[in-house]
Image (cartoon, rainbow, N blue to C red; front, side, top):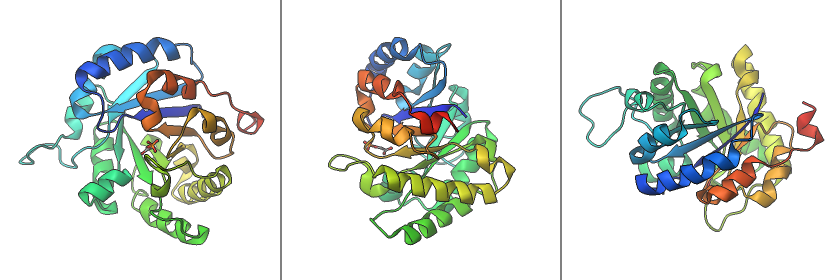
Length: 251
Ligand code: PGA
């Protein structure tokens, strides 16, 4: 599988700013033919991505979605609206949505259903809140992943994002930890069906240029999901160009 390297701008980049950002980013990554790239923007900037990225090697998408296709849900945005804007990916279950909006695994599963119903790929974030022992973390992840068994694994991406590694003041999880957790996630996905082997498992949480190479070189790390470091298009482009070491190339 190709490496999948993406970013979410979270609640950053107005449509005007997004236009400048994408115009800067696009030529900086145009040479990358052997990896898949994506950027998830606020709802209000997705149309800009469609305008600026069509025909490029960068796919675009949204950071959230409502599980219903239409109806009386003031302020919400549905999967057909996102599909209509050419979104390839829609994120569900990010730690900040679970924290700020009380999103549950059941709600996340309903969002995944909507995303796949409209032909898009769901990027589902999983991860533990605290520095728990490994066995406990595996249990937490198993509970988060279990509800995904019912879905089309060919249109699913898992992002392992431990809450303690996300955001200002945090540092990325140690690479040995990431390798072990990704192995556990892969084992669980493999039990979900034959397509479980093909689900990309990304790591996210304080990814930066300095740490990207070691993370991508871990067996079981299929890509990266970048937050604040990607707000500078030059930094995102540098992370996207990270050389990989033998261990990954040999897989
Ligand atoms: P961060 O965000 O890189 O700013 O820690 C990562 C994420 O939430 O996906």
